[in-house]
Image 1 (cartoon, helix red, strand yellow):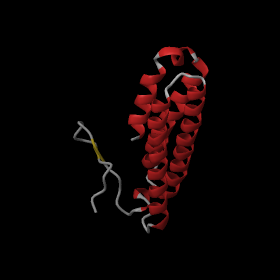
Image 2 (cartoon, one colour; image 1 turned 135 degrees about the horizontal axis):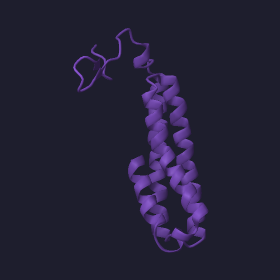
Image 3 (cartoon, rainbow, N blue to C red; image 1 turned 45 degrees about the horizontal axis):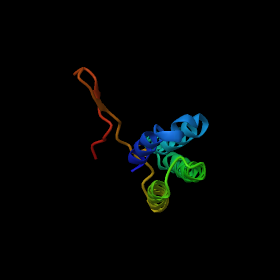
Image 4 (cartoon, rainbow, N blue to C red; image 1 turned 180 degrees about the horizontal axis):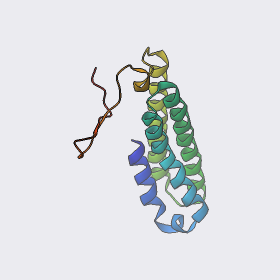
Length: 136
């Protein structure tokens, strides 16, 4: 969902007067990308506490996108329909992130890095067995 939002905002920011509002165009593209980037980075930390921290940042970035969408609307770069659709997408992402944070907070799982199973990775080099998914 975050990837789709980022792509939709990017495509929209290339059109009309939006394309020439360089500050807003760059800022909304960075914040929409930040949503998916922070989800990915937090997940790769392999621990729930860090993941929750990065999810919180991602949720904040989704809120920032909604704010910037209002500025784009007020500056007449986007239509009310475009604004409403993208704002709803960003809001749904925020709700999904909140649900995941709540789930992780209630979970007894701490994350992969706290398991007693070593992390390995599969690579083309057979002498190196590295696999992100631990065998349980």
